[in-house]
Length: 589
Image 1 (cartoon, one colour):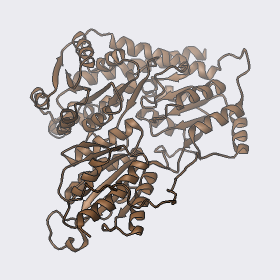
Image 2: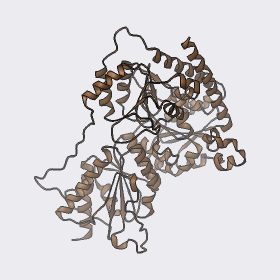
Image 3: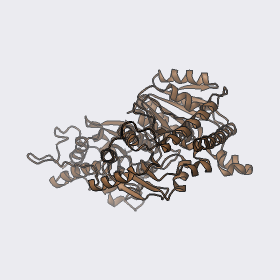
């Protein structure tokens, strides 16, 4: 049988099964060895192909698309170091539980380890960062091999999106010739047998025994000084259910900026947003000692909150996770509950019952609310300063973003400043970030991938992050993606100015500050984008509104000063500490 027919039948069965199981998008980087699979994926009517030249950027582009769409996205590349370039995105997908399907082409066995070009060891190249690896069989058209191709496709997608979601890797060895025959009338029918059922893969929610829920509910009813901590997560149902439990228990909710709880139509009376500012003070930490903490989501962005939880590690800390992970870097968990969070919240809420009519707020909840409001007043006074500071970007941006918009936030200083300045609001603003490995690599590409599924989308990042992934901008040009990128240009790594090495000026700028001195305007225009520059708050708001109303790639640069930014933050933190201590002292009288 001709090689073209063999390739078409075998890979046609595989690709068709991917589509049948719900795969809609694949990001392809060009290459020779991946030709047969690329052509079959492009030919299938139910699959959309996104071309991306650079595999490193392509990996993050697919990652962002999968995050925003909450669906598995596939990647395809040629053999050799092309696959190795996926590694940073694979690590992030593993750490942040994002489903990706990695399809790598490879040399056949006889061309491995003999000096053949573009042949490296791709077996288990991603190590433990993928959930499942398969070295695919060489293409054949026997009934068993066609069923095998369909089974692997179905199982791979199931593995990526069930349990702890994450990346799956399938490695395809191909012999030449690499050209499939796309003229076959039964291109997608390989492995389909009349009367034979397809395999369905079903999963269910994890639940706990009702007797345990009743016992826990009884215990929580007796505890006044409780907290609910919500870290980064993306379930849109969590917010309303968390607030309902907070109402029943009268427990304040410490909501991370990536928890999806600070914005939306739910009740925000119980939401505490300014904890990162006031939990930096030792006296405040000691005076706000909890008896129990119920935790959802990944590790919070705030280091102050992390240290607060470690400081009170003797209290009961209940971590709720829907799968068998261990999201507890504080090492303080007393209960690790593997249960679907929504099921847990509804079940424990029903077991606790509603608060008795006429019962006022507890002293504990009133205390947290008053300290939070006092801290917010200090922060708002700080940002009322007429000069244009770096921190104003977040206040003004959040004021301008429309309802149902998405904010992709960069790591280092941007996500930490968002933690401070993102106050509760009625508009629905979804916040996404690469907080699995917390790196600055691939942020532009991730945001562009997310912008294909979430509109409108604004990315905020620093100048080093922007430079690190400048080539990712090509995707905006190729695919006509609408995105606004706000670049806070403080000419270097702003976060290092807050760290102890900033007190060692001899080598600080060379090794940590790393000023680039780059003019990004020409680079943005090279990719067909519009470039704006803002030197005042009025300029920034006007440029932001203008960019949100236009299509394509828009980059808005804000020039900032690192030393001024440090001074602004430290003045604010010191004032918040003083006001918080005074507030607590007045409550205690």
